[in-house]
Length: 326
Image (cartoon, rainbow, N blue to C red; front, top):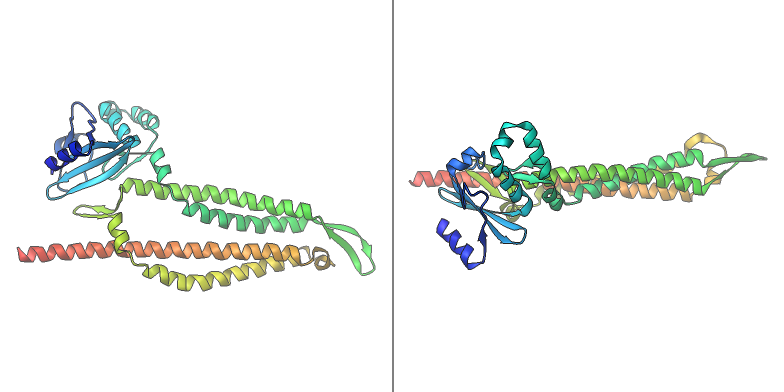
């Protein structure tokens, strides 16, 4: 396997990347133990890094009966090189470790003990949580902003024959509604970005593996190829009607609140139908889409877990059958 990797380096203009002069081209088992790398990789023999393009690297992990290839960006490799060059200082001093992590923008370590940097996590982010949270936040913000608008934008004019006369300051109402929606969107953006960052961080830590534990190594590609959307479809069958019903309920609630707030005489005639209707429809649609998106995520997570467990069981069964044959 080492010979094959060396030939690939020569044939494809891929250059071996030496992390440390003392280590050389490969990190062997003893060096891995010393530098606290690849400790959870069962059957580990050695690891090599190669530069395959500008800013792109590949890690080859050679096992007793297999090998693993993992792509890397430049940032974690350079951080690892810095770690090896200053290993004793970093391991013996908490202050030096913090300086080292700050210098390389390190926010954690992956399953192999290699640093994870802020830049590669941000690059791996997918804005699923952010979009959902912005939509949900803006919906709630619009609702509460509209409540404030209805409370403060209805102005007394005079006492008429049929009772007190009020009018709606529509620019003020719009300002409250938009401000509420903006604040809700901002909160949703922050919450969603935090959630997306946490998921991307976990993804980077796993380095393209869906499951990595002892002898069982399952790649993300294997999970995607075997994934069946059973739970996702079931969640959608339940979630779409439930989301629509909840969205309709939220729309009616917002509409009734818009018409009944403060309980002033003539309020319905003054505010008319367009303001409560427009706000209520927006809130209803936002609630429905937010809930459907939530049900999709729940179903996808369950399908993913079931797929990983199924692959684990299939591989365990295969191992048992091989042992029986032997």
